Image 1 (cartoon, rainbow, N blue to C red):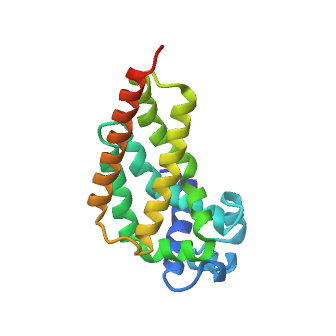
Image 2: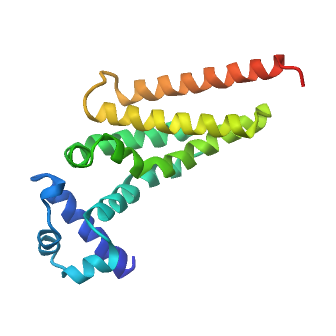
Image 3: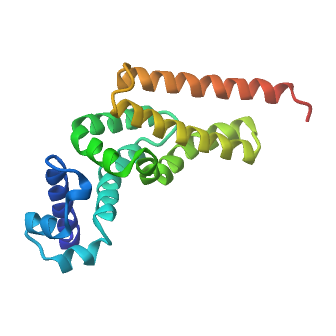
Length: 189
């Protein structure tokens, strides 16, 4: 691992420790760098601000879970790993959610989740010969929906387990795709 990556991980670890004891907006760069035992210049070499570090941390720790399981056959396992990560890091994630607000947290992950679910939707869409516009809409829909579901679960607004949520999402996607398949068969070409 490069020294640069080690420094970023050290800063991320320090941020997570501080987020367990205080709100994100109360954590200063000075406090963070003292906790990590690096100077401020080092922090600014790698990140623009605390929020940039937080985004990097989440991307490093969560998006790789989804990317490993991005095919149409194993995305469910990647999503389950994401739920487990969020559960294991609930304090930190809730701190970020409270500090940033609901909409901002979703924006952290939008592009990555969009890419992953886009691959799944496009793979099915190509088999169905679905129009590009329709596949783009479905990808956006699933991305927004998944972000909201994960957020709602994290806040304790849902009683279902991650496994139950994933089963429902999978069933919903299958129903959607079967419905699209049926509709496309019936449409005149």
